Each structure stands twice: as structure tokens, then as C-alpha cells.
Length: 579
Ligand code: C2E
Ligand code: CA
Ligand code: CA
Image (cartoon, rainbow, N blue to C red; front, side, top):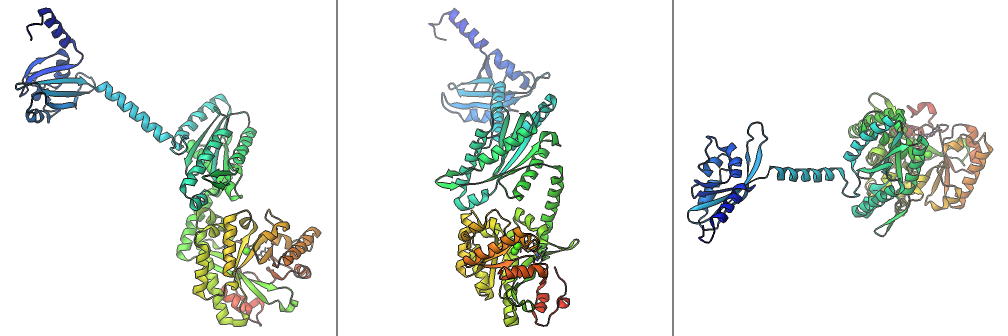
């Protein structure tokens, strides 16, 4: 100590060092303890296996084995040996283990100085902050800043308990964009993300704060939890408002978009199971809403669950069917009506898909086309039908000459028209088979062709290939005769629901007549579907329909049976199995 420090000041300094809440130790170069304050002694004692604190390195060897070497390596005065090196000290007498840190410097040629600190509490706080951050990240959707599925699950569980105790109502609304994938595919994921942001903002805007919670639970899926409802009618009204507001047009990065939204509503009093089960039931109702055309919401009913299970089963079986060649195509003749009744020659055929199911026998398309559309198998299914039909039509042309059907019509689904490269694949198929394009008719429905610029453009490209287009099921869609001119089609197929009533209902008769006239004025020909009786055939012939299709002429037939049917001498009896 310097001579200028008084004895009292020196004593004060010693007291200060002794009482410091931080551990201080001075040692020789090989760790021999020269000075140690009580805090250090307290911190180090649990580590001193023989109860001795004579040598710091001996005490710390078990928990900080690198320290001795680090100290030896430090050669210069003031050199830092370690800075806040962490180690664990076992708890004594039931205490929890502590985390300590040691910082050490070489004071001079003979001494080392160490500072010891108990950082257990500091670490606990750090861990807490980290946990909170992780938890927040796991509960918040980064894109929309909305709660995510995990956050929603736990909230539903809480709300469920609260509302049941309070006897009030709640509901879960599951939302999904109808054609989000298309937006992503056409404009890129940045625009897709922008659209999701718009939807999220709209959703938050339309809901009353405090009584509901909106979460993003998947790519283009949102769930709204509606709480404190006065009645189930209120849930229905809010759901309708949500569907209307979200489905409105918007502009994202300069693109004018309209993406309708479908919803499934699970009312709290019909809810079963835990939060995940509720979300699943609401999503089942949402799928039902999509099946009904989208842009709407549907309230969950338990029977939907069984149908969903059935659909899932069909889906997996259908995958197998495609892989194992259980699908096949049948052909229904379309006959010329304006020739004499005895000479209803085959103008063309319509290709219709069938599924030879190992247990269920031959399954009609109505039972699996919808499932194929929903689960993305329709592309592969459609490609199969198209390729099979084109090959078959060309084979008939080669084998039967003048007796061959003039064309084969193939049904398209919306997914096929939206497939990138679809037009090129049709072109390649025609080139490969050698079939002239006009010998292929492609059938689309009004709902597919209307109001969709992408589909319209694809139809124009198909037309440009020379393929003929037919408007299927005409009269069942939402558009009317007045908009027929908007469709770039060559043939109008009048739906069976008109044919079946043409001889009993004046209204239907007039509609068929009007359709024939409008179509003719637009240069389109007409096919009447579902002709089952001579009376119907005769009436529609008088109305000027060009062609007819129906059980009266023939049921759909397998290719070889149709070949027989086409022979001039054929009778119904020799056609073999019908479908
Ligand atoms: P669609 O395109 O309207 O096909 C005509 C349907 O009417 C066929 O039913 C046919 O068997 C049936 N039909 C024909 N004449 C009569 C009749 O006189 N009376 C009655 N009651 N029905 C008649 P199918 O083969 O069961 O097909 C049902 C629907 O499934 C088709 O309706 C079409 O929308 C769809 N479909 C069939 N094959 C395919 C396909 O390969 N791809 C796609 N995307 N859809 C297909
Ligand atoms: Ca059709
Ligand atoms: Ca049809």
C-alpha cells in the first residue's frame, strides 16, 4: 500500500473488498490463494472437495479444467486470462446448482487476480426472454402478424371452457381461398403473399375486436373464432359478411385480383371434441362449400364427416386406380337428327370415363370426378381420357373409314384448362396420333368458360389449333341465352333436364327452341342430351336440333362394342355390354 494511505482509509478499503457482493481472489501464478473475500469463499466452498481453498486451480479443476493452462499461457502484465468463463457449481444441502463466472488477469510477474460472480439469476432471466421470444415466434404468423394454428388451438380450448361455464355461444369459421394457387402460379408468390396480407387486413377490419379472434392456420387458410354470440343467427350473419368482404376485388402490386373465399362454420353447440377436432369439422364444411361452387359458407353437419371419410377413401383408391389401370373409357354415339329416323347415322361420340373398381364393380364418374378435382388427380385422369380417346378415334378412322365416327368429344375439367402447357400437350397429342384437330371436340361447361379470362384465353388457343369446342350442359349454368355469344364454342349441348321435359312442359319446349335459334344465328350447331324416347327425338328434330345423344340411340359402349354398333347391319342386341 502507498504510504500516503492512512490506516483508517486502508481499513475502509479492506472492509469494502470484504463486503463486496462480488468474489475477489488474488493468487500466485500457480493458483495459490493469497487473498480471498467472503463472497468468493462462499461461492467456491461447494467446489472444494477437501474443504480447502488453498489453491484456486485445484478447486476449479473439475469444473473449469482449461483455466490452469490459460493462466500459464498468459505471459504479460495485465494480460486477460479469461473473461466471464462460465461453470456450474453443484448446490449444497438441497440448494439448486449455481452458474458462476470467473474473469482473471495476470496482475504482474507473481500474481493473478480473479473476479467471481454468481450469474444464476441473470441466466434465468435471459432464458425467460429467449423462451418468450421463441413462444411468440411459434404463435405468430410472420406474414400476416396474426396468431397461428398453435395460438388458436390453445385459445379455442380456453374459450370453450369459458363459454360453456357462462352458457354463451361461440363458433369456429374456417376460411380458404378458392383459387389461391392460381394467383401464385400466374403472378408469383410475392403477389400471392400480398393477397394474403389484404385478406388478413380485411378479416381484422370486418370483425369486432374483443369478441373474435382471427388466425392464419395454413397457406391460404384462416380461422375465425367467434365468441360471446347472442345466437347462432349472429354467427351466420358474421360469416356471410366475412365471405362477402374477403371475396371483393382488390389490387395487389398492380394486378386486379378477385379471389373468392369459401367457409365452413361450426356452431359451438354442435361442436364435439377438442380444438383440433373443431377446426377439422369446420374445414370439412368448408370443403363442402367449395364443392358447391365456392364463394359461400356452409354450416357443418355431422353427416359431412362421414362423407369426408368416404371421399378420403375414394381418393386413395383412385390414386391406385390410376396407377393400376383400373380406369377405362366408354363412348356414347351422338346421332344426326335431321336425317330420316331410319337413318340416324353416327355423327360423333362422347368419351366418358369409367372405373372398374375391384370390389364395387364399374363406378360411374359422378362418384369420383368431384373427388379427383378436389385432390388434384383430375389432371392425370383427364390426360388419360384425352389420350385414350384421341388414339381410339384415330384407330376408328384408320380401320373403319367412312363408317368411323366423325369426331370424339372429350370432357374437360377446369383444372385441365388451368394446367400450364395444356394447349401444347393437346397439340402434341394430335400430332403424335395423326388425328386431324377437327376430329376432336372438347366439352366445357358454362361455369368453366364464363367470367374467367385465363380459361377464355386457353379456349381461344385450343380453337386456334383447329379443335372444336362444345358448351356442355347448356341451360344449367348461371348464364343465359343472351350471353351465348360470349363463348367461343362451335357446338351447344342442351342439357338433359330440358330434354326430359320437352314433351311435357311448354316452358322447356320454348327454351329448347330458343336455344336452337340463338345458336344457329351464332353459327353454332346443337346437340340435345339425354334423349330417351321417340317422342322427345321427334320434337327436338322438329325444333331444328342438329344432333341427339341419349339412351334411345345407345348407351355408352366400350370401344369394340361401338365398332360393332357402327356396322350398318348392327342391332341393339349385338352391341354387348352397355354403360
Ligand atoms: P356429361 O358430360 O353431361 O355426360 C353425359 C352423361 O349423361 C353421361 O353420364 C351419360 O352416360 C349420360 N346419359 C347419356 N344419355 C342419357 C340418357 O338418355 N339418359 C340419362 N339418364 N343419362 C344419359 P356419365 O357417363 O355418368 O357421366 C356423368 C358426367 O361425368 C358427365 O356428364 C361429365 O360431366 C362427367 N364425366 C364423364 N367422363 C368424364 C371425363 O373423362 N372427364 C371429366 N372431366 N368429366 C367426365
Ligand atoms: Ca359432356
Ligand atoms: Ca352434358
